Amino acid sequence: MAQQGMDVFEKRVLDIIIGSRNIDRKTVTADTKLDAIGISSLEALALAFDIEAEFGISVPDSEILKLRTVGDVYAGVRRLLEEQKGAQSQ
Image (tube, rainbow, N blue to C red; front, top):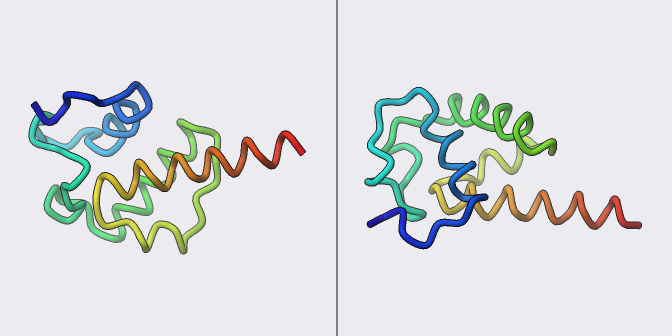
């Protein structure tokens, strides 16, 4: 039931987070801590590269250090996409 209410965007981000890890996606929620699913700060950098490639955005290192939960990743990526969209429309 953790997946209920997820939109396409969140599913794409979750696919990147889970990647090749042996994690049951049904157990991951927005509140799941990244370190609880084996994502260290170093692995978060690799995660950021994957997110950049998938969404065509640049994730500043300072943003990566702020990520603690899956929900933080969702919110951060959404915000960066909105900022990029706003910059393109100017």
